[in-house]
Image (cartoon, rainbow, N blue to C red; front, side, top):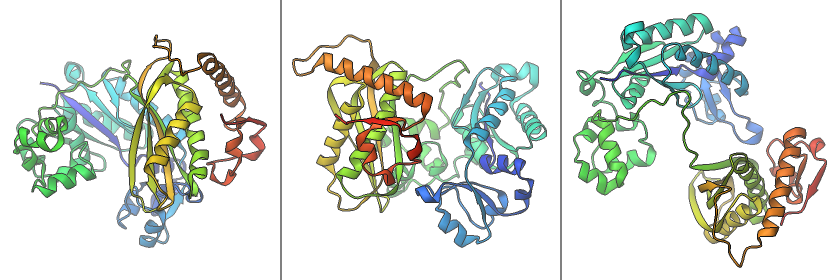
Length: 411
């Protein structure tokens, strides 16, 4: 029988800020996005703010209506990452099987650690006490026999708590929970399940796997296994890495994008960022996907297969714009857009050449972009950029005109 822990730093960003600013502990306080760049949502809040009904992800305007005296500060991600790295170092003292789940959550497989440190509940309480003593932070820990139930355990009781979900008690604890409490059951899945009368994890567990597969395809089997405590994926060791399946980037612009010209500027920017990451990993993509979110917050995605794998930003941007023109008529302005490269392959992998592709030109463009990567890495994000990016600087996030030294034309 495995022993899996899921540890979650309580109110991570807000708690870390409170260490640097002890005065925040006595007032309703939250970490929020940049309202000027329209990233104005609650990222984390302290327990006092939570009592006002403030929720993670809600707009700052709404949060301030609930609590006019709410103190909001901008996030300091470098500081948060530093604290989270130090906390994970403590986890590694108990096991080498530590799998981060975001910045502030981790799974730990402590099955082989019991003879040294005690059972899962004892290890969980040791971690909770050590992290509180050494960092002034609290964690909630779920202890169970699989990753899904361990995650449910850490969410079950907060803050500063340990919940054990065993083979003996999981039906009592887990099955009464709303189905959306289970990992990977998002808004759309919840709505679909609710429409057929499945509202709790127990009701999901007692639904036929065959029926779930007719609704969700292969994901139906996943939901069935998760709800019945049959999930068995391993906790990865610290030196294991996922194979990269896709690389993407998205942004919410300082103002709405009203036409294809606006989106072309942002797609150029995002395509450059995506292709720079492709080249850094020695990869090319065969599929380009776009994500569009309109000003009423409705969204959708579309994708296209390329004629040949590429890591050239112009190719990716051209494909993204083709998808935009075919699928969006600007019945409403766009608030945010994203570009993703998928179906990745190694850059040095042999491919069938095409009569319609100028391989020599592609090689020259790749060299140009590699040089631009090096210059921007050394001197700043927009030190060398395409001329199209300067056509409307009000759309660029965190634009610094003093940092722009030269540019080249989009192809």
